[in-house]
Length: 358
Image (cartoon, rainbow, N blue to C red; front, side):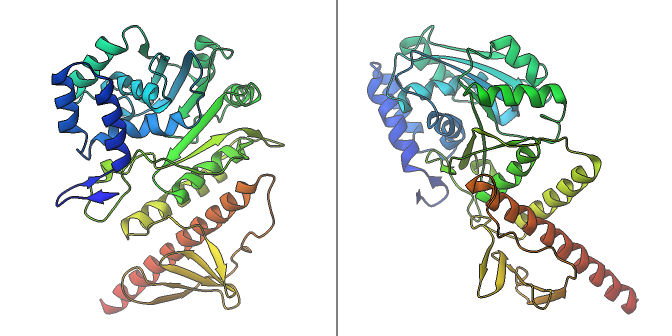
């Protein structure tokens, strides 16, 4: 990763677009690509193909992809930038069929670069990429496309509603049994494993490791969060015993964990390292440690050293789960619950002090 005076530049993105440029016979198209390839916003257009390409077979003649629960930033230019899969897989004859399922009633996010990708498709990939906006529940979409036809499902925005019905959960399990790749992604490993908490409740996990997507720009101080996009990816491939529904209590816990994750981001936690034990003290996140022997949590995020006692904390997970990643998922969940309790207690104490002053 390099950085110029104002913007981050991803060299992997630059090299990818350089490969596309070399395929273009039009001198004008090559000049345009050369001009745009170092723009940081190109990582917005390459990050989804980069995440997906790792899980596809470049020798296939055709790939069928469902982008489930897409938000506006996921359906940039009607998904046509997924044409880059042909270059990432070194197969420019690849036929790509994409079904984009908006999570809300949204339309395309059309960029100023739409004419560029349209030119590339019209001149070098005509009739080889088809993108469709489709609406419906998960099971309906899979039936519409055909389970036997699907190669990959990408869900960038998992929510507790996605597979919380028996029908949707059964369809999810059918996809995994059929060998369909179901991938989720997020800017950091901690964010990603928080999403895995929901899927493990629904009875789905992975025996694969976290994949670091090279075609994105990570979040750095002073860089807009629009560039922090699909950096870490997991492919779900394993069914667990006894899947269940997310009930009201679990939903409330997940909401507390999500709020803690947002608070971590707001105070500048990198969320790149998973919780671990160091000399009998648990390093919860970069700015928070917890000593189980004294039940004291120490936070240094604000620049000050804040110590708060938090009683009755569950034991830090140490036992392996059904998959290797399950232990990491449990540790991230444990850490977010602790962080949530810490912030609530900190705010309560701060409010008490303000009341005493008044």
